[in-house]
Image 1 (cartoon, rainbow, N blue to C red):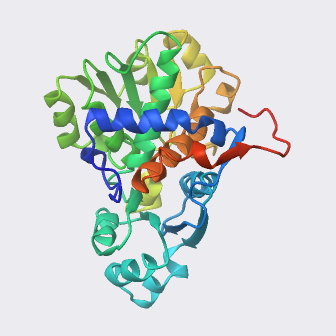
Image 2: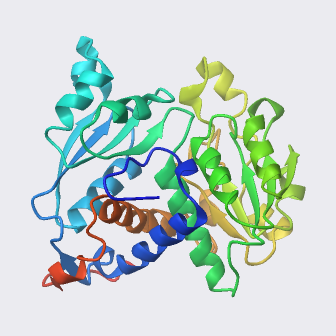
Length: 337
């Protein structure tokens, strides 16, 4: 695809070469994300961060990525704090806010809303999640994490064995990740969920149409026994018609250190898009996994900054200029990476 000036709305926009291009640029962002170098390549540019649904990681990650490239961030959080609460249309909001920004990152609770917004925007829009539909930057950072985790074992994404566990019906992160996996070869996917929360059928068919082996199951222990990655998700309670309905499924699939030791291969990587639900009634990833070196959830969040920096650099066409606007860091940075 032509990145410069383009919206990033769905992973279906990408060919495999596009994903590899994003990952190549993300690799080059590491010195800046890890505070070894500073670049001002986007000095003077403004990101409109429009998050009309609750978010911590994605919103701050997008903002940090833009700041690390030298740009500034202007935020709107919550529909109740925006003119949409007064009846303004997405069209009018897009026309106004795109006049204030050079690029917009947007999250909205309604599927298709970000694409509707982008159609009226005068600047590129990146989808930060639209309802239960898609979350393209999360899928990219997840796949980038998988690539990096497997590279240390001399493996690539082709031939991956992955189990996706939890709320696969409403989990937009797994929807987008499955669509990305269709670009690769010989992937084995185990979809572990209650029958009522299965992956949408069209996504399953897309995986099979790409030549991948897909198994659907409601048995956690047997499903995680022979995989490279266990990708756990929380119950998306905000998508259910009632709290009582969501409570029927919370805590159904819990992974802890004991289950991991008994049923997983020794180097199985554990992933989660976060937030994990740490309430006693949930705990889909138990806290006793925190010291497990194969728990990659915080490496995922670090990788998210790299991938989002790459998307901004490509969409604003500065990927080849980053180093020319760089200098060394002159403040104390802890050894956190």
